[in-house]
Length: 336
Image (tube, rainbow, N blue to C red):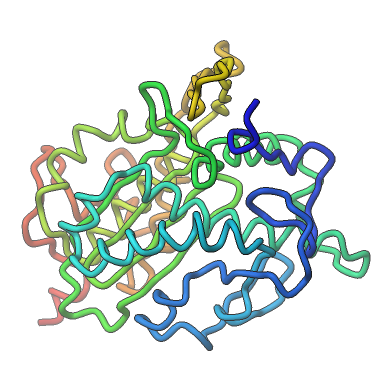
């Protein structure tokens, strides 16, 4: 196989460290690093000195959250990707929706993976004892290995045969009354990543081959052309996060044999265990618990959501299935 088409698999032998480029595996000096969140994003939203808490409960600033990265990967692959995304972000929701979704998958995936790599490198320190070590969970490592195979498309010319590895939703949010221009949330176990950039909310399951988007298509077709209120966007995000929690399969990716004249790889996908149900059963109580966490700032509790145990409270759709143009927030409207 041509060298530029070679895929790096750091999970084979757990090759993670401060001297190993996170993208290609090249041995590099310790000072060759890149920030997980790009400099332009940190500058735009004033994140440089903001704090993040990692899985081991340590706290770092956005600017100090870095991964080892060789100069070649930084200048030839990451920088061009950042330029394209930065230009799209400057155009708001229309710009992001017009951008190739494969590029957005790579961009969100790079930040998600960078956070994961930080955890894996820290776990190699014998003095660090995280409560749930990522490196000791075989199923999670299998998911991350599959994910990184397709994330290599940042560096290796790669075509996905009739699939996109992720489910990506770009929501238009009425942010006029919201003080926060930037919000970030990720969840390693479900491969979920969401990012609020002014009035654009990106919600993505990074490893589901679009299965979540398929099952949510009826609701998404109603929601996509509309501008949502923040409480509605939070509900939709909770639905996607919960669907990812219910997802019960791990996609695998196979590289087609490479011919001498090939200038890119072609990947096919399959579900390793076709006997499994794709999604575990939906449970209103579990969903309500998750929804209550994102609705807490509006003072809505799990009990409020489950007043009718068979029909959880929704700010998106009425019990008859009609979209709610002007949601009435419990308590707030009564006080007016």
